[in-house]
Length: 496
Ligand code: NAI
Ligand code: MG
Image 1 (cartoon, protein in one colour):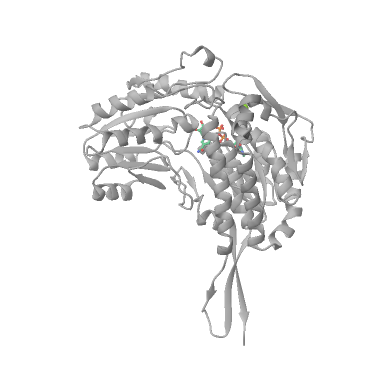
Image 2: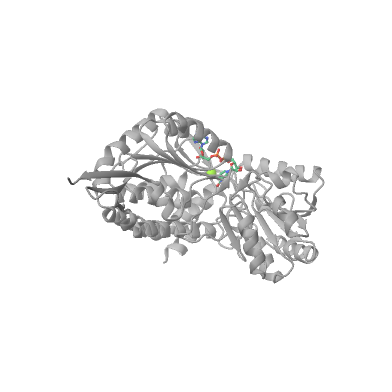
């Protein structure tokens, strides 16, 4: 029996462990206080497991373990460190079904989508492993009497904090660059979705030397904040909300730490009148990531700028597509769209739907829970489209982080550009037209770090991903991510 059918026969819950622990110094362990917190299945409300509720003392233990492992790890060659990441990538692929099912249970994302996330995480490990020989310096012809050269050295201990929307993808993939560069890591996954990272702890324990990667579960203020503040943590990498991003920046200022931040988005998709409607409609649907994370993505193109000439035809087709979405239990292979991660996310999304109505936008699809009886206990929200949105409405300015798309009508490019750039964010943008000159002009004018022309949603390994403005600092999934985990040391040899 294949692993897949075996899982189907035994049921999703067969992937759960009786007990979950953190990984500190190569040991699976509870929190020092013995405290735990429950993690729930947002599709059903059932409790899945109790996980360690770590605090500052556990952070200290984990950082000390990472410090202890650091000298040995950094003395390996980059190629030797890369070999560990390759083995880990292989393990992720072997156990993809387990990880995908845990995320489906814990986060509300579909098992199908999470299998893709595991594959992406594995690919990024292989990618950074392949870049290992590029951890090289330069020689500088400064003076004939000296030999001047640079080395790329690691920082030491990296603190890595991840959000709930792509649990295993963010927890696993963002270990690769710091590790290949020679750092050791303390990872803290989101409190809503800790299970896949705690499962990963067992694979990390088998593959990496003790202390090279440590995993602690706990909430932001209690476990995340001390990790950011710990004096031995010299580099902090964060993915999550803008508010917490700001807090991390402030906290990092005291220790003058190097940080990278991957934060929110309120991204524009601009449709010109000359497009193939079927292709562009499919892309507007995919760009919302309804069938990946129920729209809970920083990269979702949630502001849809439709040219007045095609507005009605486009919206009719898009509405038809979202109404056909198969919303269902995330663990079910046939489900296209799962549920939101928590009561808090559900309340937030519903409050924006109410706000949109109050602001005078016109609801044309979704707007609430599906009627399926089996989905009544979960945080399910139908894909929701508002038409007649003014770009200044809060609905069109603030990140909702859910399945809500706002349609704004435009007529000429000079008016469109300031509307598209009117938000605090600048992560992604999508442009649909056959007129390459217009597309290229808009791509240059738009304030965003990742622009698609005649595409949306997809990430390409090696292409720098990150935000302009308040969408963040730094670029990931690329060579720049690897370099961001190094610092330059210049060495000057007197030859005279
Ligand atoms: P969050 O930013 O509060 O949490 C992300 C991570 O940061 C979690 O691991 C959390 O424990 C940790 N954290 C929280 N406070 C911290 C602190 N003071 N110091 C260190 N770590 C801390 O995001 P949350 O509450 O899960 O979601 C709220 C909103 O944030 C969403 O509705 C969405 O708008 C946005 N968000 C954006 C994400 C993105 O990918 N850009 C991902 C997750 C959330
Ligand atoms: Mg959960």
